[in-house]
Amino acid sequence: MKNLQKLLLLILPFFTACTKDNGNGNTPPAETMYFPPTTGTTWETKTIASLGWNQSAIQPLKDYLQQKNSKSFMILVNGRIVMEEYFDSHSATTTWPWNSAGKTLATATTGIAQQEGLLNINTSVSTYLGAGWTSAPVNKENLITSRHLLTMTSGLNDANNLVTPANLSYLADAGTRWSYHNVFQKLMDVVAAASGQDFETYFNTKLKNKLGMDGFWNNGLIFKIYHSNTRSMARFGILALNKGKWESEQVLNENFFTESINTSQSINPAYGYLWWLNGKSSFMLPGGQTVYPGTLVPNAPPDMYAAMGAEDQRIYVVPGKKMVVIRMGNASDPANPNFALSGFDNALWEKINAVIN
Image (cartoon, rainbow, N blue to C red; front, side, top):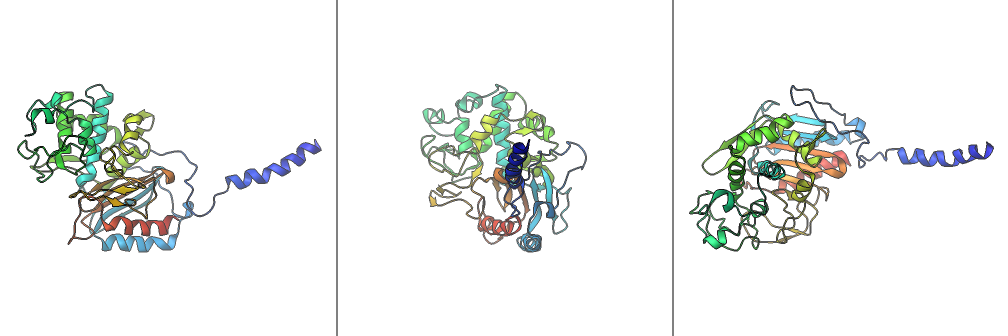
């Protein structure tokens, strides 16, 4: 018995040390993931103090967000709200356009349609839309699959954002050229043709309603843009953090989601299936063919993946910290608005790091 007591005295400090928080906010809380109810406004919260974050850095972060024309901002850890801020008369019920951050909604809906056996992303788009959806030669048009639309490698001319057959002319074989382009919208047509219903109806049933999101698609002449309140964007962020799972239901196949947040082609390593990926060796940006060395957002965690829309609409997902960050608003730099990455991202993450590290 004495020997057993001695052994316990030796190993107890070890276990105690292993369970202590390191106090710097780097270790994700050991708690269950929270999914807010799909109806009502109930949503669990966590305090900044409980996470050991730097309280004194909160106000500088808020000031920066306001200076940079933000309308709303949220930080969630394990699905629970840690920060929720609104600026300039914006509120929790105000809708706002996701811009190109909504591309990831099209990704998820396409993945759901594939898991239901309605389509295959490696099948030619022409199988679903018929011949002549572009002005490319038929043999070149037939090379283009839904996967090429998901990865921005259709090879079609990106000079005009209006998605019409006349504008979708041939530049390169599918899979050989990365170029950010509105042609991703044809994924919506593929889902509609494959499911036998309009895209928004299918999206609402298979994704939006299951997460308790609000919002609608504004199908303009050039852009098809999703609008919702900030919490609805956060709901999708929680789904993304959980690799397509919402509570006990695998809404989106995990393998497909994992493909979505990993390098999808060899040309732009920082791009998945319409998701932007941090921590890669180089990246390309909309509007050009320049390859930039280094990571997308150096100040952000390397495991971050992001939905990025014009005028700095953002969903940042950081698996290592069990964290989702949401930003909606006007362009941080109105004189130089961007379709995706901007200097705002790195500066914002400097402010966030001051809080969480």
